[in-house]
Image (tube, rainbow, N blue to C red; front, side):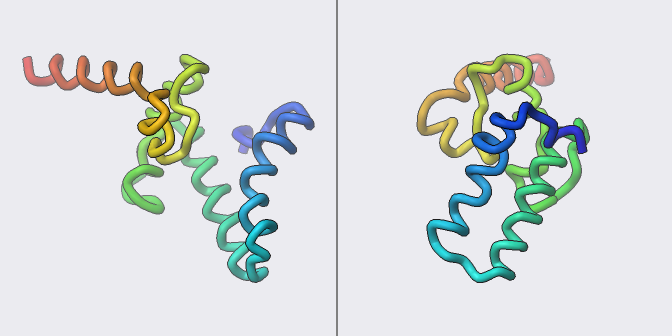
Amino acid sequence: MTCEYAHPIEFLVSNIGPVVAGPLLFRSHLLTTWLWLIIALIGTINHHSGYKLPGILGIGLSNPAFHDFHHAQFTNNFGLLGVLDRIHGTDKAWQAKMLKEEEIIKE
C-alpha cells in the first residue's frame, strides 16, 4: 500500500486528480465511479508490487516492469498502459531495453 505514499500536494495533483477527473467531468454514476476507483487502485498496487500477475485487468496492467523502468529513469514510461508513452515517444528507452533483452534471449 506504500504505492499511494507521496507528499500531500503530489498526492492530490498526481495521484487523486487524474483518477477523479474523469468521473467528475462526465458526472458518472456513483457505482461507475466506485468501480473506476477500485480498478485504478488495483492497477496502482499491481504496478508497484514487483510481481507480474497474470491477466489482471488486461495485458497492460499485468507487467509492473514497465512502471519499474519509470522509477529507474524518471524521464520514461509515465502512463499505465503505455499507449500515450508510445504516441509521445517517452517509451523509446524501454523499447530499446526490451529489444536488447530479446536479443540476449535468442543467443
